[in-house]
Image (cartoon, rainbow, N blue to C red; front, side, top):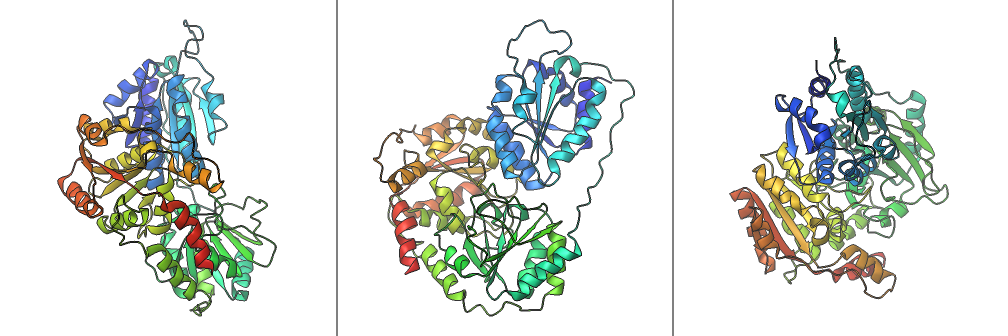
Length: 545
């Protein structure tokens, strides 16, 4: 069997449905083998976008997404999105090509040591040196990418190896991985700490956003009465409309939810991942922290939990729920007034009809239009903080944001992957004008694939988050403004449908009509970011008074 055919058979054995990428001449044998396979090849307009799409597939399914690029510049273009997957805990398998390794005739043309370049970015990086290695290396790559903590794995397939003949190939069967369970001693120590607490809170972090964890967490808070909050990447595991929900920790400190965090004597920290901005900062030993996760805590100056429960999160929560008394923490007099203040502070400008629109009104209107299972894919920018704090999620992975690498340019490619995977669900990409232009060429990919999605471009003609930080440091406004194309004409040039919002009451009907019509729609929306400093700093001071 030809080695490239064997490679594709090994990918099919892993259940791969899509490969996203841009091939080069070094991938042509592999591309030809894909031609007659069950795997759908999705050609993109930039390798970075391909890896964003593959990482999003891994994020939503728990099964490694796959992206493909050639050697040299194709591989280097993947780097940002690989880091996005690695820091964000998204399973991803990266395939790159290479010149012949046995008999090269082109000197060093386009040749970089891609395997070594990838090593600091991924969980594992290997070159396939002979065709017989393919089944074991592919099985190993998917296993490593998908096991806790998920991340990226890289395989390099040189073109001469791809066209080798392999005798008596053997495909390795997939084996289900059984997660370890926490020890009885760890569960007992956690129970003792919980039973001693008078003002406990539960924190849902990024690591809890996995399959089979939502229900055990819901059972735990229902039985115990404990209030909860979440990190940005923990949103959606439990519903944002739950009466026990406090809010999202969008900042490390001095946000609305930190009023409750400061009063808590115990934080049950489920799925904590230090790649996220810290949702709270430990100081001294007065406030106890229980670390519940698949892996042990990474100790830092700001995070040193006194109790660790290491093992399958769902199993750990089920065992704790079973042992605790019903309504253990139902006396919430210490926290209910704070919750009401948070709700008022977050929603009191929802109905503002000024134009350009305030971020609070934008988030409110988007929430009104989106179905409970509709997916909002956020790029990175100032609007991300508003959505993180103000947008209520009802299901896991319905607000996709990156609080790990926090890179710009991921919003549109991620939305394309979502629309491809879930054609019957609403999909909305929310991008700043800066982030949108970093991968805006993927509009062609979306229209070519005949997808249904909306791209909402938040327009402030500048890098708004950095301008906000610049102002907060009392520095002059300098070097962060730019000009945009006409986004309506830009969308039309790709075969998408462009819209421009010119009054606050136009956003909802424009979105509703776009979803009803189907296809790819681009909505240009001017925003009033003058509220950033006022609302995110001044209101917090008022809240604390």
